[in-house]
Structure formats: C-alpha cells, structure tokens
Length: 302
Image (cartoon, rainbow, N blue to C red):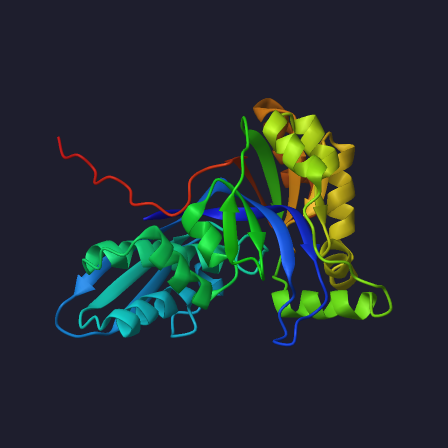
C-alpha cells in the first residue's frame, strides 16, 4: 500500500462547536510524499501488530494508540473479522507535521485490510469508517484535490489542472494539533468568526493550473497560531520567499512549512537553499496532486 501526504491549500476555521471540534472549509491536495504500509494476515489469532521503519520511525507509537492499528481494529469490530494482521509502516511523511502522516497510514490500512480480509467494502463504506478515525483520513482515501467540510471529514473532489511543485521544510519536533487550535481560540476570542468558506479565487487558480495564480490564493487560518507557538517558523517562511518561492505557508497545524515553486527546476534550487540554511531538520520535494491510498502492483520476478 502507498498513501500520500496531504497539504491544505486553503484552511478556513470557524468557532468551536459544542462537541469541541471546529467547523472547517478547506482545500486539500495530496502530494507525492508517501508512506508505505505492508499488511500480512494472521490466521492464528486476531491480534494487530505494527512495526515502523524509515525516517521518522522513532516518533511513531507501536501500541494501540497508533492510528493504523486503530483502523484495523475498527474494521475487525465493525465486520466481525476473526483474522489478525501484522502491519509494517515505512515512514517518510513527517510525524505531527501538519501533513496527515498518521491519517494516511490509517487510510492505507483500511484499503489493505479490506482487500486482505475479503470484506469487499465500497469506497463510501470505507469513507464512513475513515471518518470515525480522524478528520483527515477520508481525504487520504480519495487523494487528488478536494474540498473538506464539517471538521474536514466531508470530502468532495474539485477540479484541478496541471501539476504544482512543492518544497517542504520539516522542522525539528512536532506541533500538537489540539494545542494549535487552542491557541487560535486564544488569539481571537473577541473576533466575530464567520462561517468558514473556501475562497473562490483558490478554486479558480486550481482550475487554471497556473502556479502564480495559486500563490496569491493560498491561506491558512491556523498559521498565526502555529507561529505564536513556534515563532522561528516565521524565519523559515521568509527565507523561502527570499530565495524565490512564489508562496510560503505553514502546512495545516504545522510545524512543516510548505513553499510553492514556479516549476521543477525552481523547486530543486529552493530545496538546496533550504537544506543549507540550517533552519529546518530536513527538506523534501513533491508534486501534486496525486491519488489517495492505493495498492501497489506486486513486483514481477524475472
């Protein structure tokens, strides 16, 4: 299984609902930065295990708090599955970096276990299960570019032309999404918050396929809160702009910073500059949009 990272091209956040969640209007895009999940059936018992390898393995829990484990267990409970599964996650997507790293692993696990256990669930049935696991998990099943509403779990694909070139500056440490939302509420207690809406110019920019148009349409209501908690991210954003990025923005709740480049060559140049800056832990490049969680073809033995 291969499942992509997500970024939020526009993120509008409303006031907290009675259940504590914030209503959102967001445009997601899946980008070609992937985690791979391997699932092997256990027919001797119904346990679910997970092993994590790769760049961020030390940052990922391997107990029942792991979102991929929860995804497999939820499928077992909902559909009376008696078989277990051994999961292996190869991490490339940052953990607690605002790019849905845990959510995309959960999405990949849903697709893998659906196939492995012969459940034959439809996409809409998987979407329903995904929404119980987290706000970003349904989008990670769909991928491409999509509108998210509710708390982000109500997903509708939107039209997008062309390919966009992104560079990601991955910070040391993570940022807790709940803490960023709490900081957002603290920073705007007296401000009247309108119903969250996607900016029409963002949809037009995606339809045009022009990176210059997209650059001026990006937005993120959580950025101010993320910068309040991690002020040094402002230096990273400004550095990227100074080195030629068309736009710079905190990714979701942060602390990963994303930069839109004019083309693939510009993205390479910007990535080199950021890697040499000392402002971030590592740098990654990726194109978008790409499909959501999908099963990779088996290698051909020759």
